[in-house]
Length: 80
Image (cartoon, rainbow, N blue to C red; front, top):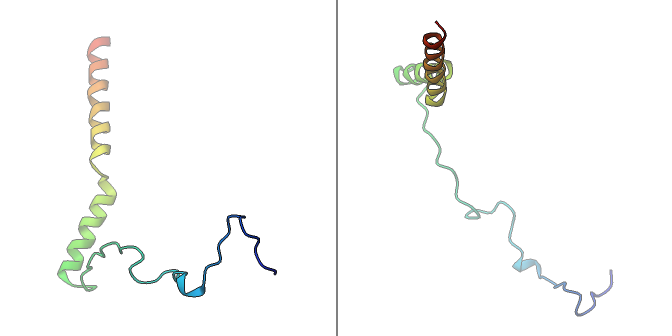
């Protein structure tokens, strides 16, 4: 490769000015959740809460389900 012509918009960067990819401090890490040791009572409680959350879902599911029940009951009252 020959020299880059002046005025083309390219600049030569020396290797010392180029940052390393993945270097420390490039972006903050997400805080990590501490997990209890496997088999401990705290771990069993954590697993129970996690499974319960997966089975029953979160609050938007319950809002939609409640709204559906109210609409169904309203429809039954109006049509009967």
